[in-house]
Length: 509
Image (tube, rainbow, N blue to C red; front, side, top):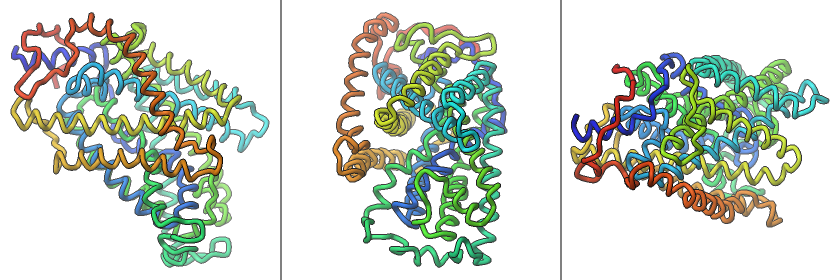
């Protein structure tokens, strides 16, 4: 075995026990489902209201960045498919401390997002059952997705497949209805539908007066990025795919078309049907349109889709955090019980750990909603960090492959490293945009949520992670024999004398 093969064998050790059971249709729908969620069905309402038709530009530009991200991730996955995903890649290219920070930031993102989604399910159910206690809905929803995740990776894939089918069906129905309404210049609640609404909208296409700022569509990109969060799920699922070499490129290349059709197409039709001032934050713009058309039953159907989208997000959160926690546990950066796996290849201990946090967090949300809003915005920092880690790892991977240190990935990102550099610069500007938009959001200092997350939240998160690393580091040093740095130097394996670990049991494809 060569030194390079030995290094790969050691890295792949964390794959032991996983089953490669996710097929083509699961992968395709996981990729689609990650790109369609409450950010489109619900979150677009407030952005339309505050930005105007130019929101199309915002979604399109961030969609291009999301495509750069997926191409970078695709190159990494085809280099080495692993359920440890970003944690494992950071360990390989930047060392143990980078893996520790990446893993816990990703877990923080999903932990806080999952709490919010659980609370949202309770809120959505009150649309039909106003007196139904939220805590009851929280427990039932969590029990459903927890059971699915504990069964097998294939059960997770099946749920995501059918959830994605329903979400796509809802969008397709809207696109068809919207296209007919816009082309036919139908009357919607006293407004004539048509593309003329793009510029006849109050304030025009790009409003700059009457409470709007010229930089509004640019600033809102810091929020739009979170509508695309979870498209990176393909990277986590790759370790349990039957054939990642075949499926990942297809899923990645289709992302840009899905964004163009589902997001930009939907926003284009929405702004062509009604003035953006008609869309109210907190109410799905799709519900607003169907209600104005007199199709109240479609509005109710969208409400069902909102519940499905929230459940899908919960499902993805449990799936990914279980795998990431196990990757951290393998290197002593998480509690040792996170290593436990079931006979069906499910890292159940990490999944249960996250679900316990979900329950307590959802109950806390009911008691201190304002405090939780700040915590939820902190989850956004996790999204930015995860995307940045993907870009950074791709840059390092390409540098090493260009130097002949490791074999080139069969799915290289085009125009590298410039696309990843553009992505990193954009993510830095997202943080700046969060601070600016947060400052402008309220005249009261402690209600400037996004601003507080950036100027106070980031240092607090860094402090907590720093303290955690001081505790974990001695264990990691002992476990690795002091080999804490990246696997590769610019000239080859850093630890060429390292004994390779036993075969991982991963079947040759």
